[in-house]
Image 1 (tube, rainbow, N blue to C red):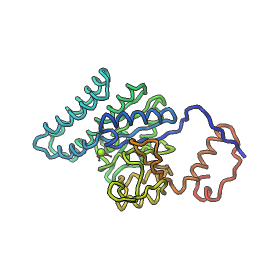
Image 2 (cartoon, rainbow, N blue to C red):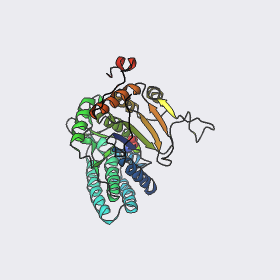
Image 3 (cartoon, rainbow, N blue to C red):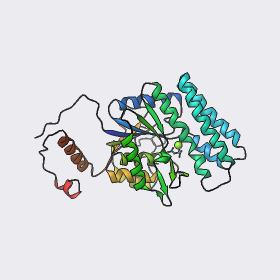
Image 4 (cartoon, rainbow, N blue to C red):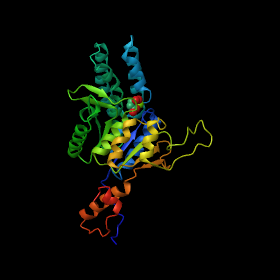
Length: 332
Ligand code: ASP
Ligand code: MG
C-alpha cells in the first residue's frame, strides 16, 4: 500500500475563511481575526471574505429613505474612524482614512440621486467596501501582504440572481493571476450586473459570496467564522441543554436551513454542495474549539479523487482500486 508521509512545508491547499459582521465589529474581535488569519496563512492559502462591521448594513438600510442622510453618514464615518484609530498605526491609518473618505463621498452623492433601480444596492454595498480595506490594512501592518478585493468585479448577477457560470469564470481568472504571496480580503455581499451596476446578494449574502469563491477556487474547505462555537439543536442562550452538533451532513444542513433553522443565506449551500466542499462553523472567541464540521455526503469520493491526483503529481503510483461508490458518483 502507498505510504502517505507528513511534510513540514507549508501546504498550498486553498481555504475560504469567512468572517461575519460581529467578528470584524470591534478592536478586540479584529485582533482575534487577524491572528486567526495569520495562523491559517502559515498553513494554507487562504481566501478571506468579510462582511460589513456589525450593525453597518442596518444603518445603510435606514439611509436609503432617510431625510437626514448626513447624520447617518457621519455615524458611519465615526464608527470606521474610531476602529481604524484603535487598530491601525499612523501610516496605515492615514491610507485607510483616505480610502474611506473617497467611499463616503461616493455614498453621499448616491444618496442624492433619484432612484434608478440601482441606488439602494449601491448604498447597501458600502458597508463591505469600508470593512475589507480595514482588515487588509491591519494584516499588512502585521507583516502579511494583504489586499482588499472589490467583489463587484467578480460576482455577476442577472435577472435570476447570481450568474454562476460567469462568476466562476471571473473568479478563476482572477485567482490564477493573483500572486500566491498576496492574501486577498474579499468584500462579501456585493456584486454587479452585466452592465456593471452595483447589486447585492440579499441579507446575510457574505455566506453566499464565500461559497461561490470556495467553489470557483476549488477550496479544500470553507471555514465560516462567527461568534458561536458551532451549530446547536436550539439557541444555547435560551434553551437549557441544547445539544451541539460536532458533525452534520451538508445535505441535512442545507434542508434545515431552508426551514430557516440555521440562519445561513439559503443559496449559500448550493455551490459548496455541488463542489463537495466541507463547511466548518467555528468561533473567533474560541478558535481552539471543534465548532461544527458540515460534511458533504460525497466527500469520500472527493478525497479519493484529490489524493490520487496529488499522489500521481508526486510521481507515485496509487495502488488502491477505486471504490464502487466513487465510480458511481463519477469521481473516477
Ligand atoms: N452585511 C450584509 C448583511 O448584514 C451581508 C452579510 O453580513 O453577510 O446582511
Ligand atoms: Mg452583516
